[in-house]
Length: 112
Image (cartoon, rainbow, N blue to C red; front, top):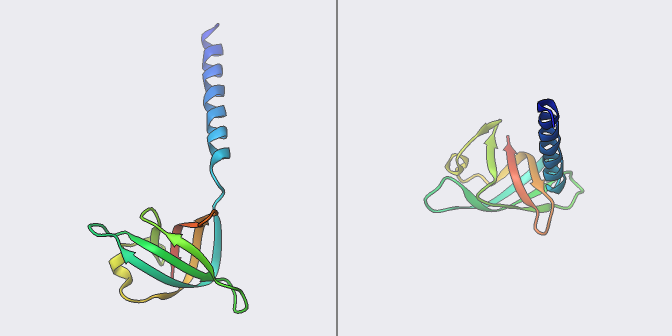
């Protein structure tokens, strides 16, 4: 096989593995412009949290419970922040990005 042929075959194998890997990942969902109620507990020895968020998309909508774990990013006005920067405030406006499942897991909380 020529050098060009082996380069093309390698590129095809890499592209196929990337496509297969992304097909296995669940699609991220989101609720934006939501009222968010946080129930968080600090993970000892870190600036991360466990808990959940209740996200309500509209006045007549039922709240959606989404779990928060140590991988969830907390962002305030676009900047990633540690848990202690939220203080004791539990009610926020913003968006929650999450992976669907039982339970749904938040990937990012975008608070305002």
